[in-house]
Length: 185
Image 1 (spheres, rainbow, N blue to C red):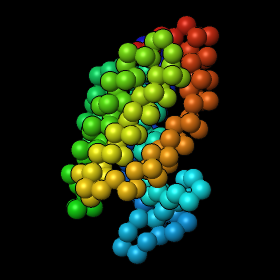
Image 2 (image 1 turned 90 degrees about the horizontal axis):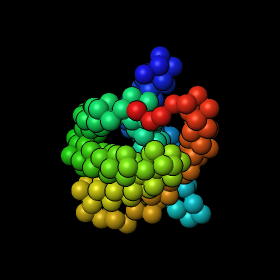
Image 3 (image 1 turned 135 degrees about the vertical axis):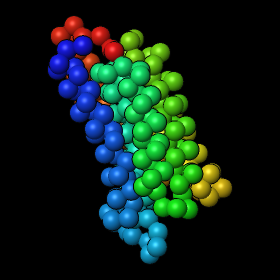
Image 4 (image 1 turned 90 degrees about the vertical axis):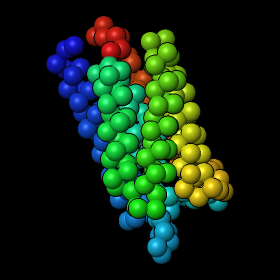
């Protein structure tokens, strides 16, 4: 593994870890509307609102893929486990289990889809795994925390925006890797 590849992987790993506290901070502090004793919300589509933290969760799914691409599957698993623990630690007491379980399940689903696709088509792998991960995360969190899927569309759309915004960077990384002769870890 080259030092550049390792450095890129460490940067992706740190950024992945930072998405968790960032998501928790955003939910309580940033949005177009902040519900008293509830989350701050942002519009994600016409007439659809979502907690602002969904943006960071969508980004986390992409960054986990980049950790795996640069550092390998072992680091990706360690990142998922550490992220699960951090998610549980930072979540409000009433949401600890839902937050940790949704994180663990969705990141594992992301990994399961990304891993077999990454060598054939990186952009497709990141999109498909992110799509699966965001749906699983949204469904698992809402169902475990509230037993209600009323806010599923906002959660899914908010996370999808971040994945779509990251895809041009992923395409650039793929082209750069091809020019440098770098294969996935």
